[in-house]
Amino acid sequence: MPDKNINIGEKIKSLRIEKAMSAEEVSRKSGISESIIAQIENHKVSPPLGHIISLANALQVTLGELFEDSADSPFCIVRSNDRKTVSRFNSADGKTGGYSYESLGHQKQNRQMEPFLVTLAPTEGSQVEPNQHVGEEIIFVLEGQVEVRLADHTDVLNPGDSIYYDSNLPHVVSCHGENPATILAVIYAEKEMMIL
Image 1 (cartoon, rainbow, N blue to C red):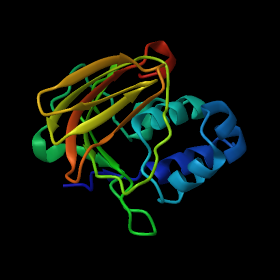
Image 2: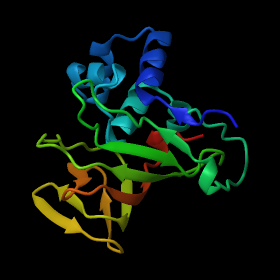
Image 3: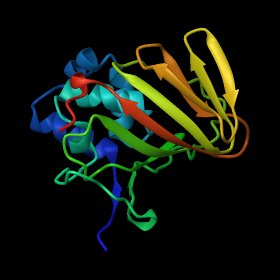
Image 4: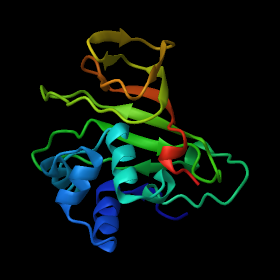
């Protein structure tokens, strides 16, 4: 069985170089600081989904291309042992990046939604900057507790709870408490997302 782990930082850096774009240009187009882009490319942080969407738009690629999807079928069945894990790594100082993703739709062509199984690790006192992007998201908590900040509203979700919101609201989704959390996240980003 081929290695299904994808390093999103390496892929972003590779695409940026291939397209002859500077980190400054990607920063300007994505709204993400150059320092965060450098940390993503150098495996120091695992980016939240909102940053990945913004980077895909800035690099003018589909999310599928970032996740190395084949997207060659009108349907997609993903067996539990056949998920693609994206960017599960720790920072150089030993702290967790906070996020890892498993793509649940990587073979479906012309998709309008991006489904992921996301593991949120407990954060170690770091303040996460809100992100925003075009579209809508729904999150369903499978395990653990999840803190959701939307603009000036903060709430804690437990297993079985869900939230549906406009992604253009500044938002942060993070683990709440000392144990990891697992969520099903589905993102719809209209035509601007360029999912093919």
